[in-house]
Length: 236
Image (cartoon, rainbow, N blue to C red; front, side, top):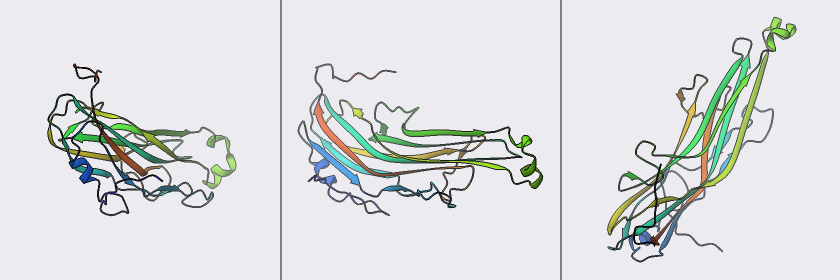
């Protein structure tokens, strides 16, 4: 049986209660701690319904906000690994009046230590894409369909939903001794037919996009770099 320290975040049934203690006491190389959210995203798989493909469930955006105490020694490195199930929803519909439609949805994860992004994230690009989809539907058939044109009821609708699990390593080298604030967050980002940012949907109607996240976990391992030069190379 797997055992995890659990934290409690507002608004969901999530693990967050005891995880701060292992972080706070992390003093030696090789220490490990984790936080887990158990709330799951789900897809409505009943076809032909108004909410076919709709996403439900999932956890809130903030995963972890706590402090970590590290020893006062050189080359102490934190390996931070957020793992997350992500869900994406896209619905593109075309009609006689709008014969092309495009939307996109994405789930992005950011990790900061003492307010600074953790590599490979940067100040200019503070989030890492865990999942992203662009969907476009175009047609030129309406002019050829005389019957439905006359009735003005021609349409084509494409709906797609997926769930997938993702994991990514963030590395904070040479963090130095002391108490540090660690924050892990995820955000949803959607665009409309014009490519402009739009609110991710909660109603799953035509020409909308949405996203979901959960369950997930964040693990942190405190370790030492392999070499005297620091052992971590960060480049463009």
